Image (cartoon, rainbow, N blue to C red):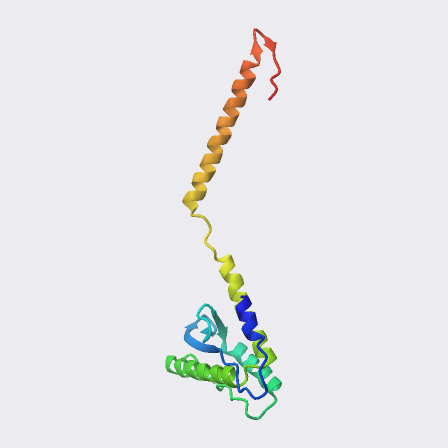
Length: 181
């Protein structure tokens, strides 16, 4: 995680065109009941250990485009793949849009990687991915948990039996003796 933040916070020299170390790959798309989600992978060209997978809707990506375009404040900012109102769930169209999104984001990463909002968006994706990975650390196998529960029950029963045995042995010839441990 620290490596990512280090890379994102690289300060560019004014003469340097780009600190292009990240690439964006749209790997596939998934249809849900009411929308399409694109599966996106951001990878580092400097460190194989820095990569993240996430999904996003076209409308969210379009909103990001609007924010980045305003921040860039230049007519040279790339055009976003157009919205289509009808036939936007057609497989051929989705594959074309996915390729266009891939091209768009790689162009933005190449030419506008110094945008504050882009860095913020990337850092957010990596942070969410890292938190998700922590949550998905596998829990103990249920059979192991059951065995531990059974062991705890057995130990409790053994302890109860010992207590009962001690209580019985404290009465000798009707007299009660107090045992101290």
